[in-house]
Length: 280
Image (cartoon, rainbow, N blue to C red; front, side):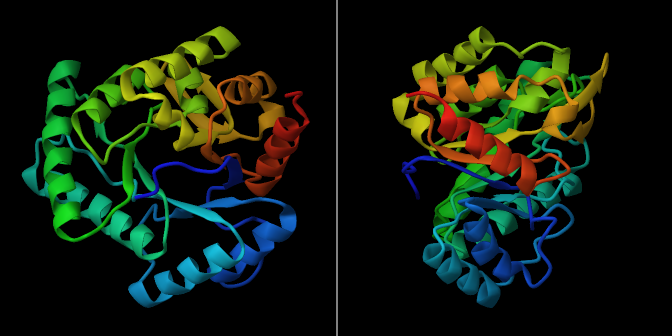
């Protein structure tokens, strides 16, 4: 398992829009753009087979691209249907296996819905199920971070406190912090003090090392009184991304910062440039 990352790395969620060719070739293309991370999108299925994963592993080393992955969207660890829960666990497992074979870093996933259950009970169930998943991953020799993501709607399980609570219980689990989702969830979380509170909370509860291997999502976002509606490009939204990047640098955060804006690599390059221009 990758315990720390050398710097804060920037890249797109998926194949760059401006690239045409096989997915493997996107790694060299990203290096040419000056980017150094990429998220493999398994949103509908885990398409990366073992032989192809080996190619990704070799090329990610050659071009110095840190790989993450997004597990399929069809995951709900709080479903009343046992078969759906079992399928959810398998989807996370399969995504983690594919990423591990590709030499990657961490797998992000949307963990659960509250439905009408008590949030604390949902958290307990997520802990229980991810503990079983962790045992399966260890038995299979799969060693990557598995990361429930902070979510953008009040109906979805996934506040910072809930995900950190699960991370405290499990060895292979740490948060995936989606700052756009946090902003959209209540229309708040858009100021340096709020971001400092989040990072300080993670550092206090999970240790300073957790800030050296973060998995972050950033994009522009449109939201309403029910939370997230859809992603937009950063310049079209009210997320104060420049100030956010300043806070990330202030805390010396390292890891992967993935752009989920529709323009993917353009916002990744924008954020990398802004970040590098911030005075030390």
